[in-house]
Length: 196
Image (cartoon, rainbow, N blue to C red; front, side, top):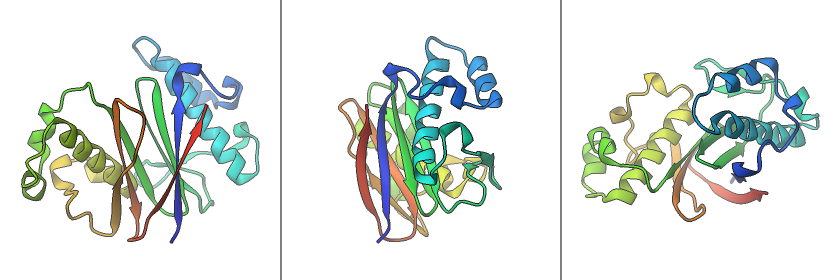
């Protein structure tokens, strides 16, 4: 059974590594983000990702080469290591694995009304309440991200009760959030870690 590491990152502390570890394109993307603190939190998440990838690949964070895969999902060209990032508010998750992986995290204080329109018959049969609706949404997003690009992201086409060749798991995270993980294959060992 292959392990998947899921790192919990506190984004309120700002970028972990120097912003110099980010590429010019990453800094430009951050500069385009609107909203209080969005650019700082995005850079903090990206810096943490670069640190973790650099540690696994044995290179400096700034030397990690990132490229868009076939469906636009970021990858390290030529590396077997797969990863995915999700963040909301001041909290991020980074999943690292040796196979395709997707992760999503949501705040419990957000509305879940729109999620109801995306439920499949199997999901609707569970009669989900607010928290379960957000968990289903996390599973859908994680599955779409694991597939890579989400096939045009039509959430009603992602049935979390029948994920095909992927394994879905809810992951335990800090209070006030829910999260899920999708991994290619049928066996899953999740190792939760924190980076403060």
